[in-house]
Amino acid sequence: MKKSRFHSPSSYRVTRSTLGRFLLKAIPILLLVLAVERYIGQRFLIGGDDQVDRCLPDKWIYLIDTHNKDIWRGDLIAFRAERMAPFFKDGQIIVKIAAGVTGDTIHVDPQRTTINGERIIDGLPLTEKLKKPATQFKRHETIPPAAYWVTGQTDKSFDSRYWGYVYDHQVIGRAYALF
Image (cartoon, rainbow, N blue to C red; front, side, top):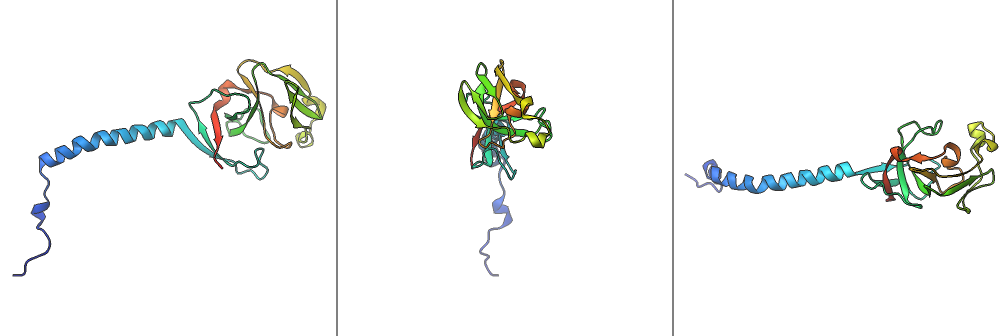
């Protein structure tokens, strides 16, 4: 009879004590991995902008931190659309620049938009598409509490010039451009 190079199946049997020791080590590690994955999965979203004409032209993939809603002037802000038809459906996630915050003074006219006297963006090029006169979008006011004035980086951005403020209840979190 020829001797086999392989061990017999009985030599691979795991004893109860070996399995118990393995499980004592594996279960805590598995629970830790699941807890970390759950935390990261609930805290962060990844979003993309598939529009041809982006309002933030060099950016198209974003990381959104849903636990960080401490938004400052100049930050990227992710929020749910409200009152933004015909460009965005209610509830759609949008990322723009928080150009103005509570207490800032906004001035919009057909030539430019300023915040606290500084030029933010020029003109109102979407008035024809919206079928409304530019004078309908004129305003000079202070941003109310719990509100933000958002813009893109291009003049053709559909932003606060046309539909007003983003309010705290719409904010998903702070966004970070990845690409």
